[in-house]
Length: 83
Image (cartoon, rainbow, N blue to C red; front, side):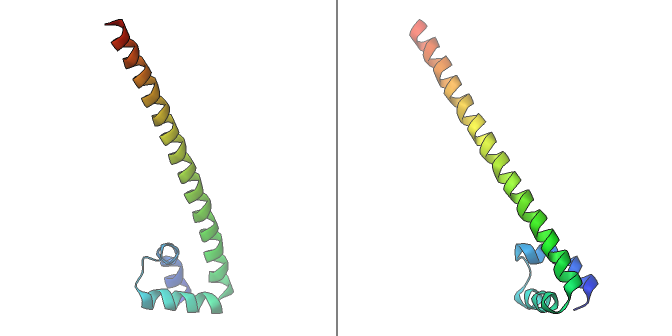
């Protein structure tokens, strides 16, 4: 595999969304090419950070949704007590 091909597939490699033969070819190339290995390590690190940030944002949204649901429930309980 050539460097350009390896870099083209690096995100799919990180996701493990390639067929096994491509995964193996990229893995082999990364073991033999310091430049591509460095590129992979940098992209993998950014990917991990982005994924972690995304999970934190989803957790915050879920928490906000939970709070909104609790407020709506309390609001509707107040309406029921008035009637």
